[in-house]
Image 1 (spheres, rainbow, N blue to C red):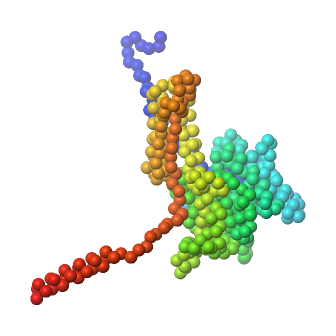
Image 2 (cartoon, one colour; image 1 turned 120 degrees about the vertical axis):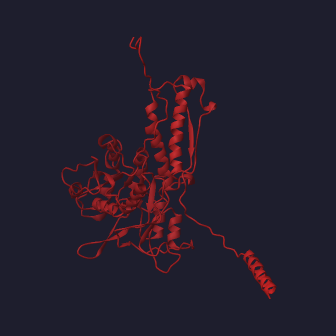
Image 3 (cartoon, rainbow, N blue to C red; image 1 turned 135 degrees about the vertical axis):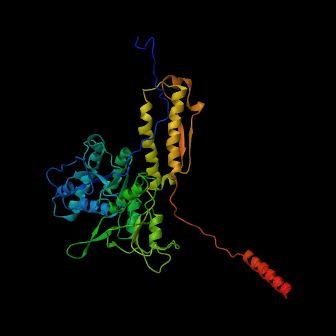
Length: 424
């Protein structure tokens, strides 16, 4: 007997709702070859660093990875110094034939799920690095096809990895023509793939330009937008300037009011595009600069067409997972426990609604989903519904004449005339 016979006992009431625990969905993941990397950067061994870590970036060496990191850094917000990055180095080809080199390096990025190689090595990051990347790219390796009716191998493999990570990948498609992009797009379907139909030109030393993948720049915009929204990934990256480039790879004709333009037709095919601003053109996307426009995934399900909604639902699921796991095993299944769980969910969703990240929510517990037999085994079912807002993509303005203004003018004129006659 440990309780005092003559004294005071304190019993802590532990049935209060728990504060929500957020997850970071802005960690960038890159799987790509780094032929100039130092020996300390191993193959299929994820490393974690910040995008302004000069020592690590120098160890990775020049190439597509360094360019992607530079593209990310060009997009960051005020007071935002760097993005958090997980990098998996894959094998580079020594072939001098460009086609053979591309195919060999692509195959190594695809990797083997049973051996944990290629992009599958990103799945090791959680246990090894205590961080999970959820903004993924394979810069320069997602656009090519062996034939117009065959999917790119990296894109075809990526969804399985992304489902495990609860992440999305920005994938660059063919940027040479609308038809090339559409042929590529028709081979893919996934709510975790965000397609691009543009590449970028950047300045080179001592002069000139060179074409580079756009994935790092667009993911950099995503990192910035998450930062601006307090880490909440419920917001689109569309209509945002792309910094640090001298031009997109080609001019894409676009009009805000005409669907029969190449830009609008690419957007209708779920593409993301980089458009040039035009002074004096009211139907252009902007007066100047280079602007990214893209809202879509490659989902066939219209409920999950927009990547901000997919990422927002991932955020909610991870938030509930991290918050509610505390209750497992610590509490008996009582009415108080069920109410505490529901209150915790309610308060988490309430805060998201108050900040404008969701439009509304509902948390319910029903008898038909919870039988006595189920409760006896320590299980219960609670349902939540939430509505992530869609990005504003189309504004319809009905323009009409206003006859009442003439009536008001006549009334005012008659009043003035009557006053004038009365004075005279």
